[in-house]
Image 1 (cartoon, one colour):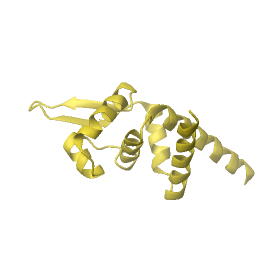
Image 2 (cartoon, rainbow, N blue to C red):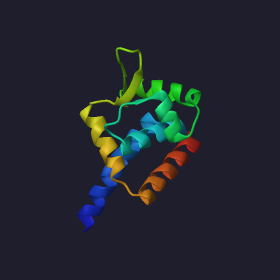
Image 3 (spheres, rainbow, N blue to C red):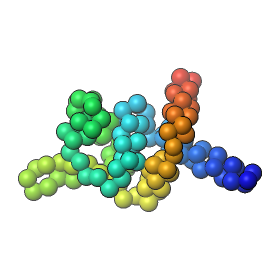
Length: 121
C-alpha cells in the first residue's frame, strides 16, 4: 500500500511539472485538459471555441504556444480548413493519458498547486 502511494505521488509530480512547464495561462491549461478528454480529435478553431465556450481570439495565442511546445499540431486540408490535434509525441501522449485518468478531485488539486506556483513566481 505504501509503495502504491509513493508511485502515485511520483507520477502526479511528473504530471504537475509537465503542466507547470506547458500551461503558462489558464486557457492553455483548459486546452490541455480538453485534449485529455478528446485525445484523438482533430478540430477547427471554431469547434474548440464552441466546446470551451470562449472566443476564438482568446484561443489563437494559446494554441500557437502549445504548437510551439510540441503538444498540439496543426494540419491544413485541401480546402484550407485548419484543424488541431494532439502531437504524436510519445511522452506528451503519456502525460495526456495520465491527466485523462485523474478524477475531478485530483484535477482540482493539481490546479490549486499550479495556481500557488504561479502566485509565487
